[in-house]
Amino acid sequence: MFTFSNFNFTTSLQDGLDAMGFETPTPIQQEAIPLILSGKDLIACAQTGTGKTAAYLLPVMNKIIEAGSSTVNTLIIAPTRELAQQIDKQVEGLSYFTGLSSICVYGGNDGNAFAQQQKAMREGADIIVATPGRLLAMLTSSGSVDMSTIRHLILDEADRMLDMGFYDDIVRIINYLPKERQTLMFSATMPGKIRMLATKILNQPEQINIAISKPAEGILQQAYMVYDQQKNELLTQLLANQTEGSIILFAGTKEKVKEVERELRRKKISVKAFHSDLDQAMREEIMRDFRNRELRMLIGTDILSRGIDVDGISLVINYDVPPDAEDYVHRIGRTARADTTGTAITFINPKDIRKFANIEALIGYEIIKLPLPDGLGEAPVYHQKPKSSKKHGGKKFFRKPPPKK
Image 1 (tube, one colour):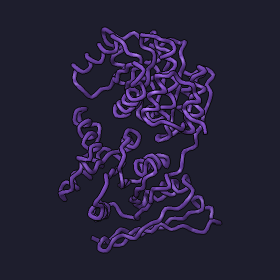
Image 2: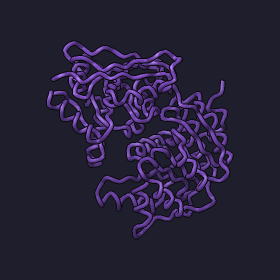
Image 3: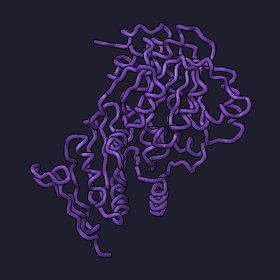
Image 4: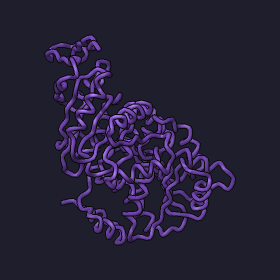
């Protein structure tokens, strides 16, 4: 059996893996680690939950230990402060016996925090984990940080960073880095803009493509056809029947997140919304309460689907169908982790039928559509024609008029 010991990591790094119970590497780790150890640039397509963070941290940390450098060595750029913090915590865990140090740099806090982070970077750490906006602000401010010793640049969730408008920031940051470096790019999807960026910043990269995984077998996937005006009552009934486990609800926009939170609070349901309008201290408090089971239900957008790694989530509700089929897999992957079970329920309104058909095409099977509970009125129809039909990829959709009030 192939284990982490086959990589011949330094003793201190292997001791950390043993202490954390790491035994068998995942497919992305098996493929990426040898390439990174050999010094190759890499572009890897792998989704959240495949073990990609350890796939780049372990070989880079091993190289830092062997080099014995005491200067800033590695820069990791992530799209959100939540993911940056998550990466930093994994560095802390893996480096427990190694003596390596890291700094997490992100925005959303006060001027004192900016100065403290900048001072910490100038004083040095082996690994910097940063969000693009805050890092660029530090690089362009007075007393800027010296990046000339960087030997490894890692872009994590590169597709999400470009979706959030960070392309120009990333290019500007790279101008502060030495040209002689190893660059690693990890992305869940590989759109044209990602390939364009890879061509610009990577040097003859190796490529790894870990196909997007199907939803875990432990996830019970269900869906309801609903009109928008039926969603809140359906949600209320579903929550009344859910007595155990943590819950995440995904909505399509920040405004919708706030709206659903207000509606549930009006019905005396304990819930908190997680969005960019909250200050950093509040976001950290909400996430801490959720991890500690002091808060049972969280509402957020797709950014949350890639920035949260919490065990014990028993129910995921898609209040809106995600626009990208792969985002559906990311969302529902928050439940049934580590061979447990969970439920994922999606609300489909008439205009989202085609989006949901794309999801079913991606995962390769149809998801059961449940009838609405009594008292909610008539539901729209999701109708599938025989496979011989070519219209809409073999599907034809029928809509009924909304129920009368």
